[in-house]
Length: 130
Image (cartoon, rainbow, N blue to C red; front, side, top):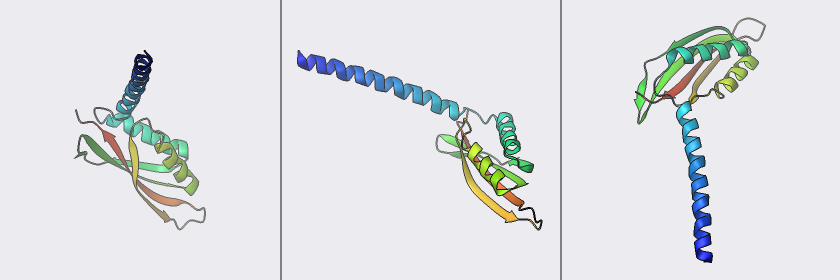
């Protein structure tokens, strides 16, 4: 009887673990959309650049490429701004609701005395090809 009770408890634990895994899978699938959703992505990146205080953002998506079961869309963002604004932008990109990774970051000082940086950030955005 004790063995049966242990099995029932293990079954309950497994069911709870399975339910938690299903919830995590839904969150992951939402962060890895079935198509690029380029318009929404570009709007989000532009909004983050503006919120961060970056000046003159120029956003250029490249051609998507396959990477196993997912695809990658490289997006290059050129802009001017302070180091603090750049840091805030990177922090906000990491909070996007979809899977994205800062792949490359280039900085150069301007000739101006106001500590403005000319920056290029390449973000890889992941999606499931449809």
